[in-house]
Length: 242
Image 1 (cartoon, rainbow, N blue to C red):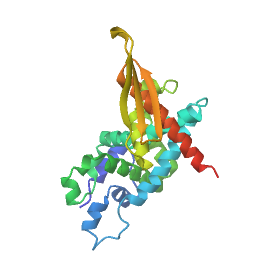
Image 2: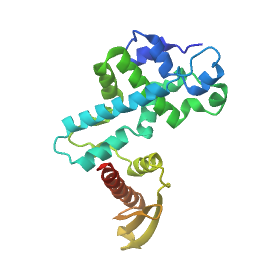
Image 3: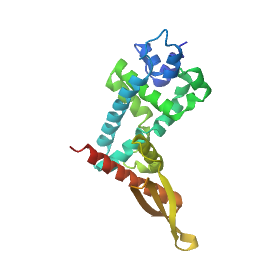
Image 4: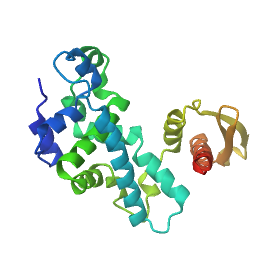
């Protein structure tokens, strides 16, 4: 049984010409596996997710470059990493109530799939692709602007909006690259009681290490994570070179 797609269309502010595209974007492979005898194998949302990831990446890159013409590449890369992260997509999917409309298999349903971060993030990317196929790039771009880039409403002061959680971005980037989970440890505490300075070390395996100091362990760990992100970006760019 299809979800109430008209209710979701109302939330999206867009009516699909081909509602089957919308239904496919909401169809998880666990649901399809239970209906495999009557539906084609590619009727789930995984191909749409693949396309939506590219459309999202392009749209976010375009918006950042146009809004921040003086920002350097490393800064733009960090902002983009957050805006396309599963954490940010999950938050936006929850705001839309997207989980209520998903087609899930019985086991996935019982295991809390409607609220799962990766599942909702993937479904949102599939939804972006469905809107692109059905209505074109402007429709998809408008949706991304409204729901995913709303944190950029103050283009001159992005970080003051609380946009970046470097530890979250670093963990997702490390996982995507197949690297160990980042570890943090306080290696030094100095200064008087009323003005302590904490030095935190961030480490991914034995190869990637950074340190940063701050007035709190939280601030120091965020800065250390930011420095590790810069190291990862440098390594990725070096690997891409011929």
